[in-house]
Image 1: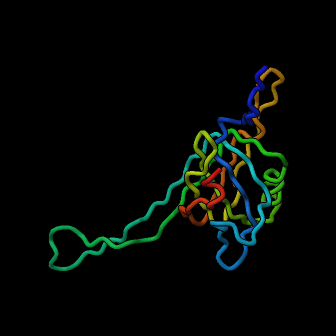
Image 2: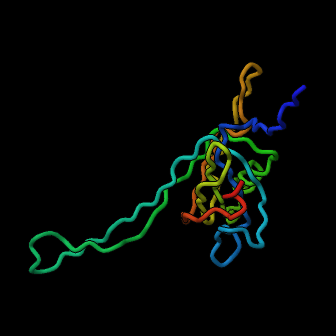
Image 3: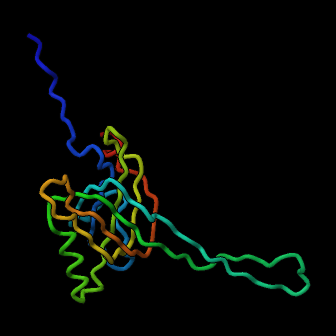
Length: 173
């Protein structure tokens, strides 16, 4: 009689974004790109992440004698809020973080490491958010007949966005 193969089936197949939250240390408050000595405080898996954007507002300079357009110079960069949707986590740490900030600990910033995986859960891309701050937390509705998730939405404001390479161990999973 043939034995079936022991394949591990991921029950959370749709959750292809692993999100890890790190203590944002001084002076730069950056999440570690490739590991290091930082330890993840909280983690979750999300099915959708939106708002990964950076916008630079150019500065225009009008020069005398230049009649065809203005000179464009780089200006300040701003970042929109990042929205994590339909997520699951093993702990209540993300709610506790939001609760801390809402209670007046507004300086409690965390670095965020977002790892995008392919369907076989091999890491494809890593995006870092620097000095993130929770600005909205929406839990799933209570419905006994629904197949709800733990976190419906988590909105984060942040002070920087960076594209990093996956860790070598993640790329070979």
